[in-house]
Length: 386
Image (cartoon, one colour):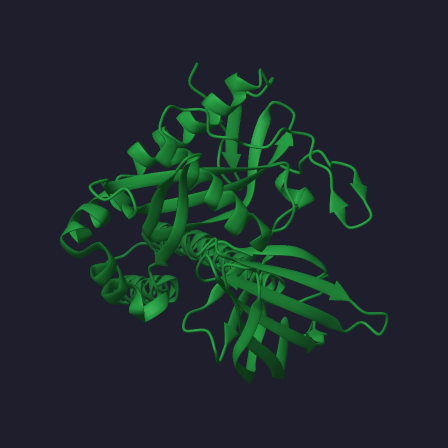
C-alpha cells in the first residue's frame, strides 16, 4: 500500500513538470520574469513531492519494523509454549514414592527405585471388601519420551475368605505404560479398562505435606486416636467398623481412617438379615496442624447384610457394585427399585459433603482435638461445623 502511494507521488510530480514545461514553452507572450516564476513554482512543487515521498518511505519503514517485531514476538511465544508442552510430558522425573489414582480413589501405587535406575512398581486396586487386584511391574523411565513402558507386568486377583485365607486367580501377563503429565502419571494397562491418573500422596510442591508420625519397624504409629462410631444406631456402628477393618489395609498408613456411609435405604424386617443399601466411603487422613488432609480413600457402593447378635450387629456379607463397564448393570441388580434413589444420592454432592463434615466434627469433639478443618489434596480447606 505504501509503495503504491510513492509511485502515485512520483507520477504526479512528473506530470506537473511536464505540464509546467509545456505551459512555459508554449506561451507566446511569457516574459522572462514570468518564466522564472513558473520555474520556481515547479521547483516548489517538486520539493513538496520529494517531502511527501520521504514521509511515505518513513511510514513504510516504520510499518515494516512493527511487523517484524510482532512476528518475532509471536515466534518467541510459540517457542515458549512448545517448551512448556515438552517439559510437561517429558524430562526427568523420580517415580519413587506412594501414589493414588485421583479418578477412582480406589487404587494405590508404591514405586521403588533400584540402584541401576530401574523401578519396581506395585499397583493395588480394591475392587470389593474381599477382593484386591494387584499388578507388579518392572521397567525403566525414559526422560526423552516421558514414559515407562513394559510388556511383562504380572497381574493377579487376590481373594480373601471370612477367615482371612488368600486365593489367587486370573493370573496373567500384562503390558502397558506410565506417561508423565506434569507432576502426575497416566497409567494404561491391557488388563485395566480405563486410564488411571496417579498423584503423589505426599508432594512437597502442594504445600499440604502432613506432619510425619513416628514409624517403628514396619508398624505405623498414628498421632491420632482411632475412629469409633459413638452415635445411637447399632447398625451404623457395625457398618463403620466393618469399613475400617476391611478397607483400611488397602491404602498407605495414615493417622486416622473415617468412614462416611451415605445410606440409600435400610430393611430391618429380618433381624438375621438386615439390609443396608448405600455408597460407603472411607477417607484416610493425615494431620497437618489443625487440618485433616485426605491422602487416600475410596467409595464402595453396594448392599451390606447384617445380623443381630447379643453384642449388637455384625456384617455377614457385602455385595459391592462392579467397576468399569459392568458398573450400571451391577448397580441395577444390587439396588433394584432403589437404583434411581442411589443415582440421585450420588449426585447430591452438597449433602454428601455436609454429612462428611458432620462425621469428622463428631470425631473431633468426642476426642477434644484441636482440629478445625479438613482438606482434599488440591482443594481449599473446609471449616468443620461447630
